[in-house]
Length: 57
Length: 307
Image (cartoon, rainbow over all chains, first blue to last red; front, side):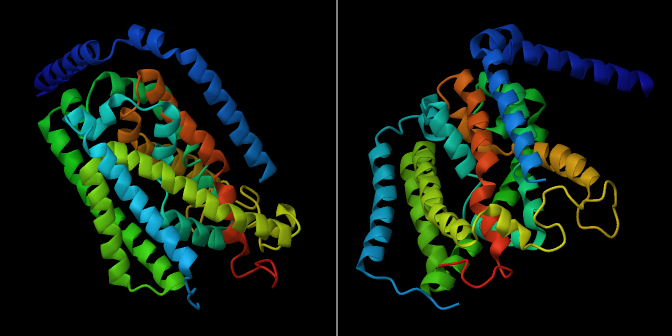
């Protein structure tokens, strides 16, 4: 049973890795979305949210 | 509550609104030549439009009635449903999940689950989402009909059927594009409708601080008075808010709800798709001013705070 579970987990992990390779190339996504700019916006949103929580605490 | 008697201008506004949403559907009908156009607006919309639609899909009669009544009961703690319960999950969706959703070229979350896992997972998610939509749509229609009956004296059944018919027509004619443009219009109307109410309320209460000070038992505060951990005997505690609302409920809702993610999938690029939740997050930050503040005054405000 342990061997069966191990083989099943390995197969699923392999399929998931293959799928990620097909549908989502991390390097391509990073270059095309310019995630650094989005991260800056996200940080500003978090800071404003913290400020609102402090003001309305 | 006494109902409001409509005059000719009110009827003109109502008829104009219904005509406009049908016109949007009719104008967009010719563009609906493929499933991509119908279900994803041809992936052509800018982030600002999809972002407003993203947040508008989360608003409605339920928001007006539910959150206002919730803030009347829990005071400023209702803010957490907009901040802790939404902001972290929305940011996670925009930064990490939307690129994966968008670049997989799927038209829906169930379709993505089939791609990622298998048909059984897709079917389970689709069935769960369908049941969820039936229940939430019913609640939204119910809340809308209660509002129309309370303010305008319309029959409950008339309001439900009228709203359902108009929604069916503009969605059937114009697909997701018509839905998104109508959501932007409805969001503008929500802000235009609630904005003057807030202005009058804050002016008559001589400021937000004075409005909050009339709330009993720390209800004017978002965090003050909350126990750190108190699973029994308390309505809210910090641990439950952070991990229960912020991590479990927030992420479970905002990162997987197909109704919302479909708006982001209609964006014109992967960058716009990622920006869509960020636009929504900015709106979400300040939306409590429109729905939480009115709840603060409900039933507790001195006479004269309203008009």
